[in-house]
Length: 468
Image (cartoon, rainbow, N blue to C red; front, side, top):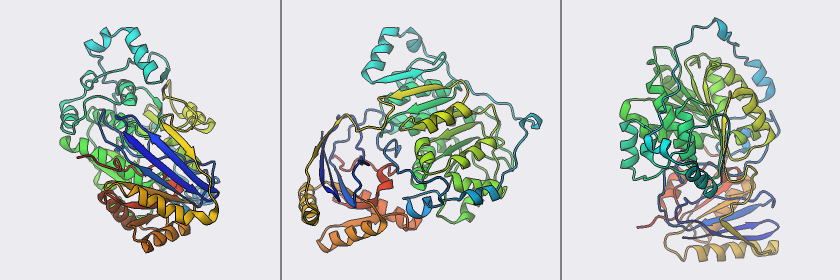
């Protein structure tokens, strides 16, 4: 499968050519080293499923720009942000600290994993060969062994049936290692690139975890909580949770900034076993006592590095203080910076760390990058030429990343004047507009999407060219 990515930057034209494995899902890639006014991303690919996750799970890795802590600008300037919150406003809304030694905790069961005979019989040499082939590093005490097949995990029939119905044959690499750990009730840090399938790596164990706990009573908060940096990623996670949880009546609620509070408030008050939330909006509901986290025993931090980059560390700390100390925590990140490591050391207990590939943010090794430099005055003409070449293929899409919201809108109008079908998305768009734009882009076989650079991960788009 051949893929082609081209970026045009303010300091010249950056042309990147991708060669991706047939099994991989399409991914977005953005280089932060060149500060650009706009850049194009073009991906042409075949989609051959080798395991669940791929492009479905959304936003598995990428690059987010670091904002100053407490700058309160995340919602305004970011794409799909969870709502900026200043330090002062956070201090004003102190949550009551819970004295857990005086709380009567609901009985908790976390370990549901029984290795199958095929797993226990597998030789150490076979496991090491698998780890070496897929660049897997596992650190931690007594980590459960890798599984190679879905039927080795011990999932209940409703999960196995749905996996089969969706046509997935084998776990992705991160799932193969993460599922036994999560099903054993261990805390986990998972570090992997885009398209690793991490959403199912934590959602499926969450469903099993929930079914083994006491049923929610009136006024109870969720049993499982997933924190995500943006509304778009939160909604994508909700889609996966709904697909697999609806068969057994596990309810979920998605709460995020930039949308009316009342519908989200009503959903929380009706009760949901799973809540997917951006940190700022969840803090609001906890402060208003719309919900509580006393029943929460399964916590997921998705894109932890990005949440810290966006300044959400104080909110995350406040939220974790509201969760029982014997909880299970799964932290997912594209990178392993000091800030993420410190958070893991403080809030995770005896955790297992899984790393797929390098722990440092770097260019995907499957991508061959070719750089062509051009003059500023040449960019418009080069962009038109490039998009014309891209759309010579009847089923090709393009994504253009812009440095600012104004630049995004300018590029959109420029392309429309030149008879290209283009849509734009950035922080000033309402939630309804965002959903409309993304759906339109998904449905248009030759669509062009222009977005601010913070959308470089978390879009969760399917392969940009489908095969028939």
